[in-house]
Image (cartoon, rainbow, N blue to C red):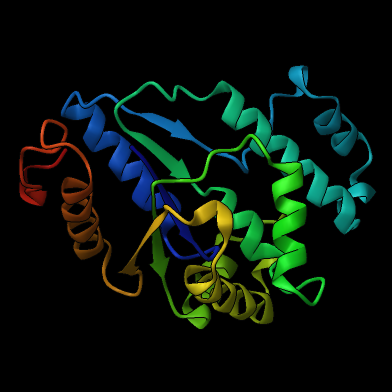
Length: 219
């Protein structure tokens, strides 16, 4: 079962996944984590080394498109897909969402992503952590990071949220068997974690999530 978590930058996705990994480890539930946007180890990737040596390349959208496809291919090739539960920190859906209307037609976006990420599996379930763009923008600004700022502007966040909504309803061939679920990312973290855990219990085999989540006893 491949379940990926999607959402805007600043939606709380990383915090939710970190808490989930801790809970799964504590309960001795076997799982694998796939992170298709995570940089490839420099010793295994000349594109990552080149990006580090020539930061100006990151201002070229064509380079970024290829670099992120390279990261997605590496993540797919090295993931432990044989595990009963595979969690995705983003997925191929992110590649669609970030360039959904860039070339005017979603069909061109789909064609390009499918060509560059042909061997990247589509998730069985996409869980969209939906949050108001204004809140995501405030959270992203509070992190004080110096990278990824282009994707954290309010107009980009609004456009990406709209793209997620369109993709969920659009007949993307690669996602024809993918089921979509939406969680309210505007709510307090504890309530969100409870809803996320309840959803995971419904989606995965009973053997994986046979106990309720009691936050009062959670480490």
